[in-house]
Length: 257
Image (cartoon, rainbow, N blue to C red; front, side, top):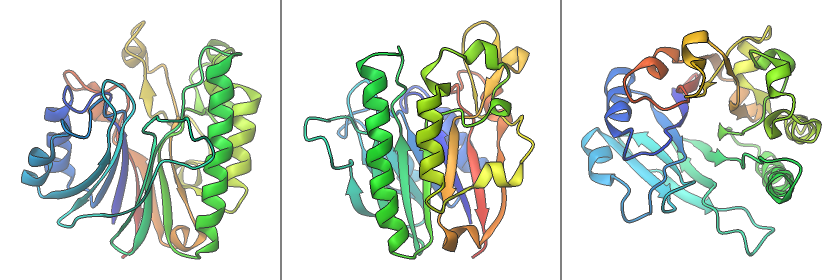
């Protein structure tokens, strides 16, 4: 079972690339982020024509998450995270599908830091950790997949110096991610590539793709019941090099059964 996380950076603009990916790779489950689409303008018909059911949590012009599943309709469990009643960002969507609990996550970027956007990022990580702890207590196979906007380790970026002042790599961001993982989650990509040097994102600016100046911010965290089924985890890097591609590459974990 191939479970993908893919920040599409605008589903309407990248729909041809997403359709290509579904046709060529035929993943079982796809968690999308940064739809930049309202619920009403989500391209449900195109997704269904490709053979996928979908649940989505949209927002006009920015944010937005979805879960696609091959041949079935995911069953929504929760949208959004409790803890801040004024938070109307579409960043979390949790479903039941194929015997798994799967969440698509778009964690706040947090730049510029310091400031209110960074403070919101840290609070959001704490809220996610609260939900993640409750999911672990269910003792089910769970996958928390998405764009976490956190570079966990120095070897997860092409240049520590270049990213030193970015919210993605601040000590507080890393500490929040480490605290989350330490609950008992397995970082699938890190487990399969412990030496680092695997990127999931390349900026559009300064020839980052051409220079391979990327970093790893797209993660799949597995509960113990899901981690026991882990076969492999990789990045479908070549899709980043296609015409009018997202600045993220599809990142996946392969689970048994």
